[in-house]
Image (cartoon, rainbow, N blue to C red; front, side, top):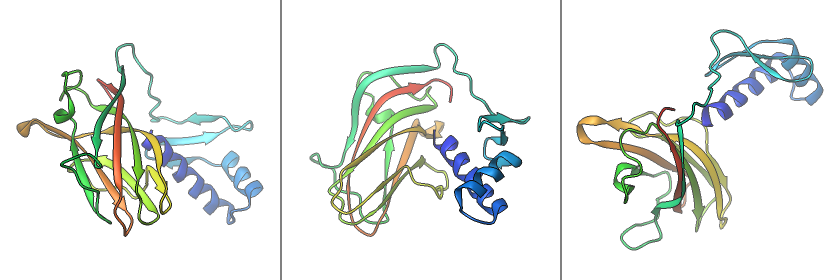
Amino acid sequence: MTLYAYAGVEVWAQAVEKAGTVEPEAVAAALRAHKFDTVLGTIGFDGKGDVYGYEPFVWYVWQEGDYAPLDPVRILDTRSTGNSPIPGNGAVTLDIKDTSANDSWSLDQTGYVLTSTVTNTVAGGYLTLYPAAAARPVVSNLNFGPGQTVGNLALATAGQDPAAAFRAVNFFNGTAGSLDLIVDMSGYFDTF
């Protein structure tokens, strides 16, 4: 989902640039009149505003067995004993394999459905999820203000280190203040 949201931001930014303004009617006209390069490929919009893809565009077609839903399982809560809040401009790395109490998920999965909730926020900021060992992207998955409790669903790809039997996701706290993080998993993908 992050890639689709990021592609949407890319398209909007390109349309604003082509329109030369942020005025909605001009941007909408630019969307209908041009093609846009995104992380997923080149897309365009027809007169009704429906998206169409040019080759090579990645339209993912879910296959039976690709997605395995779970009853939500709490896999991280920094408020619990032994954990501590994520410091400002700091990150926590969550080893997905270590969270499997019943081996429902393992190193074989490539994507996870996670609900991340921030609470006890000291300052306004953002949270970014990204694969361990990967560069942190410039987009956020969750934005919040001081004192807010906010949650958001995200599809996350975990970074992999097969030699260490390690599959992990980083959670970056993009604020000057600390926060607590709660992460629940509600499914996984065998192929993502």
